[in-house]
Image (cartoon, rainbow over all chains, first blue to last red; front, top):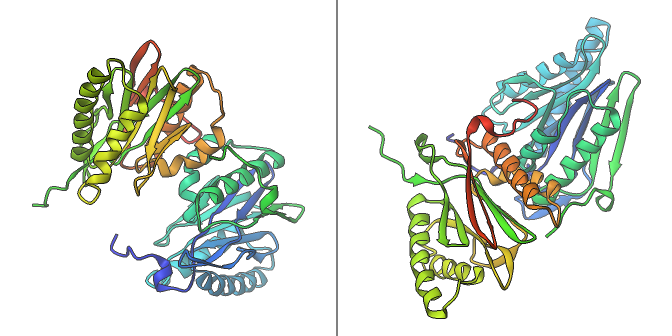
Length: 217
Length: 210
């Protein structure tokens, strides 16, 4: 654990965020907060969308420097469309996740970010992949990331159930984001959620005042 | 040979009020760097018959503060001729922590029952502000369960609900935090006195991925 600096001190617009992706019966939901901050002191954007569409049914989001996020996802988007043209079929979610993993692993000195890829493909249905800091690729039923995720590990472990319905899953993701945004000072703003199913993609935005409220001191 | 690290109580501690008393809970792991030196340490220390405190941070500092306050409370309760208030215990803890805040690195949650205020939980934040709260979590494991306690806490829970809430929270924190583990200790304090309970690792509630 040699690299203990805060990302914000080396990079610019940065890292505080909460991201998550959860599978449900028939699809997957990927979500994030919308705050971009510099050094944890200044909020440079209150409504940034951290969910990037890399293909028709595949989204990804990155916890880390937003500059890195934009650069990496742009490169990933290009590689994935090229791959999909060569294969003459929509890309597998695993392929998209692998592209991100390659970028992360090959640049692990410069990048300090966690990636989540979520989507739907015809072979395996809804899937969530996470790329950890050093470049390990892992497939999980749900995953959380970013600085705000620390606070919701307990909640997510307790409340996740496999095979939820879409509504239950939306409620779970919204609650988790709201709880994390309530405790993490570098996560906040609105909650962006994208529901991906075989039929298509639906973007839900929940403004701050409509987020669920919990016991507040 | 690696230098011995200081004994630390990086831990998960929680205290919650219910109508008529409080429930305190803690894990039982004490680590020195990467080694677990004690896996069954009870971090709920008695300050008086119906006032306990939960220890976290440096093990030595926390234990010393608890022993000093135990002594001071005994003297104080003899002087006033009755059981001390929870506020008094919390103030005594705060006095020591604040005066020696540069040297000490322990964080104590004080909770108990007295006849004037009923069940109370008192916690001191990093800078020294003392406040009474309906529930408090502390220690390294607490970061992982803020979301869970925010979502699940309800006002006016019964004693059994509180005990279940504390056990669930400890179990979730212990499964995510490397510095928390072992068994769960619970103390329930009400008008009649304090009841200690220990829940072994394999009896703790399990969740989705376990």
